[in-house]
Amino acid sequence: MHLHPRDAYAWVDLARLYTILGQTSSADRAIRIAIRLAPEDRFVLRSAVRYFVHVEDPPAAQRLLNGARATRVDPWLIAAEISVSQVANRRSLTASIGQRGLDHSLWAPRSSSELAGALGTLLLEEGATQKARQFFRRSLEDPTENAIAQAQWASQRTSGLVVPALLLNQPTTYEARALRARLDGRWEAAISSSWEWADFEPTSSRPLMMGSYVASVVYGDGATVLDFSERGLNAEPHNPCLLNNKAVGLAYLGRVSEAITILAKVVIDASPQFIQPALYATSGLLAFRAGDFAAGRKLYERAATHPYTKRDRDMRVLALWHLALEEARARTDQAEAAAARAERASKDTKLAEIAALRKRLEEVKSEAPGYQSRH
Image 1 (cartoon, rainbow, N blue to C red):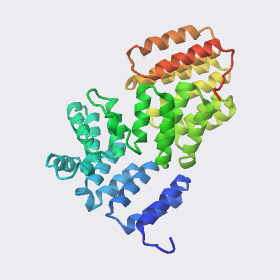
Image 2 (image 1 turned 120 degrees about the vertical axis):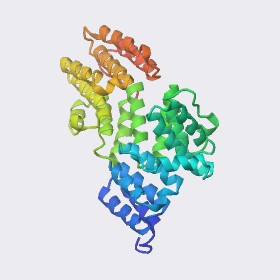
Image 3 (image 1 turned 180 degrees about the vertical axis):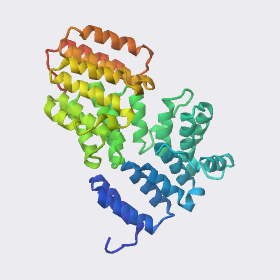
Image 4 (image 1 turned 90 degrees about the vertical axis):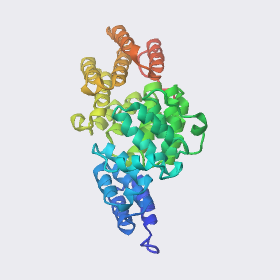
């Protein structure tokens, strides 16, 4: 940096390296210098947006984009503004501009692929599924890897949208491959694609959360759960999802006291609502592994009846299956009833994980008490 102190791209690269190392204050300084040097540059602005979202300040990312003149005319920046407005739970100020631009074909398909995907996501969340599908199909005409991943995500939430296998086989589509593998129940592929995705996006916690989730739910593999979560915590030491998953991995490895210490770093009621059921379920897991079955049941019940699970029924199903696993492992007199309840709850779900959980339960029933890792 001493040789090229006014090179904005070099400051962005430096911010990225500091972020990977978890040195947030240094990363923050570097990215702000880059913004001052090139306040209208697409690469700098999109990089800064990713940084602000990473440090959980999406409003700052939206303010940055809306303060740049380039955002009104650049489809890449409009796409970023629409996406970050959803993360910030605020109204997008550029969605109408982007839609008019697409309606008049102002940009080439490659340049507008992420914009079409962002508008599709916005419409999907508003319930306009037919219009959303049209935008997602348009995003796949000449897509970036981000547009492919977004369409794959959407295909799991609406019928009539399929991402062609040819697109999934393109280089760097690791996120989309991981999402498709999970949907199809190809668990080893989901884990390997999550590692590739993490290498490709080293500042993102999402591939590490997915990989640790699959290793936990499908295999009960504490060692792999720990590998994923600890890598993510290097860059995001306070991420509640990763702390939760690390506690699960430690518990599966029999390191219950360490798991309790890790989970104590998370205040459940102060965490985002979407993760609270998982935190209660993990608290139930730790109570079972510590021998307090009554407390464990109450905590799993809180997970299964949490307000968020009324909107996400799959999360309730997962909580009930994990309760059944712990009851079976502990050889309690409620094990059979818990398993039957989990089966009843699963009738209306399409989760590929259910077959894996059912297999895990049969394995637990056939084992002597005590968890056996596949390592």
